[in-house]
Image 1 (cartoon, rainbow, N blue to C red):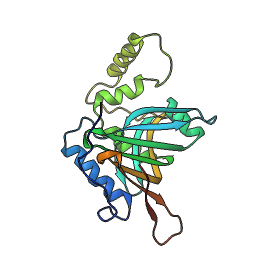
Image 2: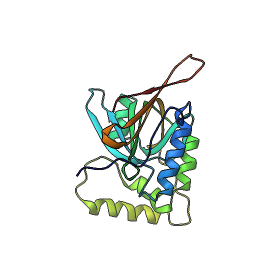
Image 3: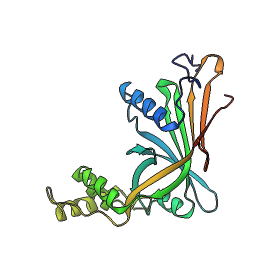
Image 4: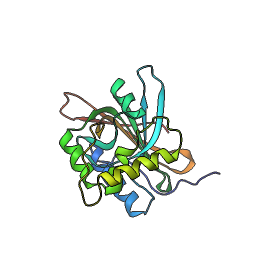
Length: 210
């Protein structure tokens, strides 16, 4: 179905010199618009052999140092990042006719930061992190639910749940952030920020053909 792209524009005159301020504005717009899960992002990784994989995860914070998410380190994405730390993030804010693509290197967050976030999660989610051996093959859902029930008995509320040693956060440090805004006649706006190491201006801003 053909879509009429008439919701906005992205120009060099209005875009800031660095990408994080623009991302913060667009993220706030996605929240204010009531988009479901505005922090949902597609995380793409690749194995050491270069086999790509993509899945949806949740953004759990962003600052000028990068974008944060948390997961099981032994999951498929965790194993990919251990072999090949380069990753891409895609924010598909389609109702706003916008998307953002982040490319960069993923590093594990310090244990204390991962622990602080883990303790902020609901008790059931903490139990779930222990119960699920993420990405491993299991015979059926019953095994997962039984494991959860056993751990819920072991660590009942309001008891604290220890942070799993196989679980933690990642920081994606961008070297490229591209903003896409739909425009009429498929003449979309695309502005890409590329990190310029050693330059007095740390970000190069360029317009790409749609």
